[in-house]
Image 1 (tube, rainbow, N blue to C red):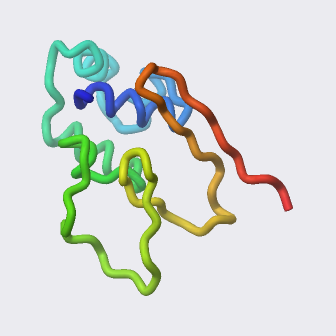
Image 2: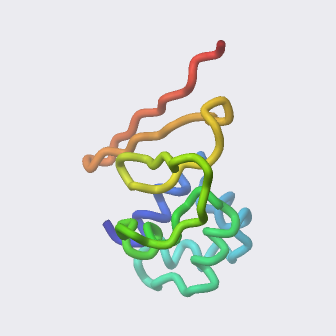
Length: 117
């Protein structure tokens, strides 16, 4: 999966159009369009804006598509849960989860929302 595909996954998971995503991370819409089309590769400032705006996105996953074993992570008193598909750390508690989106290689996805209790 290419980096522009990972950016698309972030957009899709957050329910944002390309113009909404560009505005949210603070880049020109044309810059995002060029990255999504593969014309330009995103620079470090562009990637940093994504990670700052979406703290649940793992920078290593965004850059490489994988999270490396033994990579430094902020210590926590609880074991960290990860998304099985991307190995991206999940933030928050179960009652703060709005939805979980599972993306499949064929381009389809399913949305899972916690039941109201």
